[in-house]
Each structure stands twice: as C-alpha cells, then as structure tokens.
Amino acid sequence: MTPVDDLGFTDISPYGSEINTPAIADLARRGVSFTNYHTATNCALTRAMLLTRVNNHRAGGEK
Image (cartoon, rainbow, N blue to C red; front, side, top):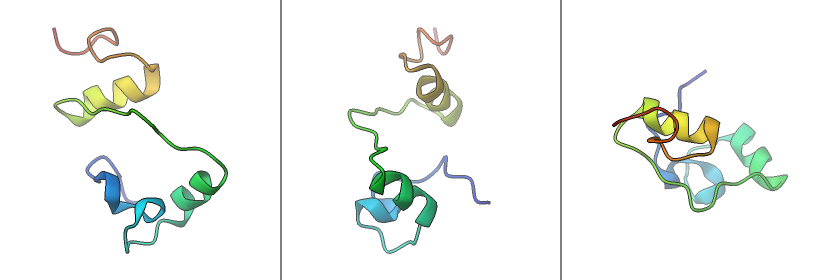
C-alpha cells in the first residue's frame, strides 16, 4: 500500500487525476467525499483533524 499523506486534491481519480485510485474512486461513487476540508502545517495535525472532526488546536495539536 502507498501512503496518501502527501497527495494533493487533484492527485486522485475522482477529482480528475490520471492516476488510477480505484478504492478511493469506489468510495466517491458511493457518496463518501470531503467538502470544506482543510489541512494543517504537517501530516500529524491534519490526520488529528480528520480523525477527531475538530480543528487541530482542539484535537491537542499546536498551541
């Protein structure tokens, strides 16, 4: 498996990339999609926001 921490918005097939991402495309076809999603200064903070559904400051990130 390839980690996807460093992908951009348009690097996956549901959003127009030439890179084939069948699992992500399948999720998008079934209606799973992120809207109004923001990233933080590094992967760990972004992952914390994604998993907790709150801003990284509230998720125990940067102070």
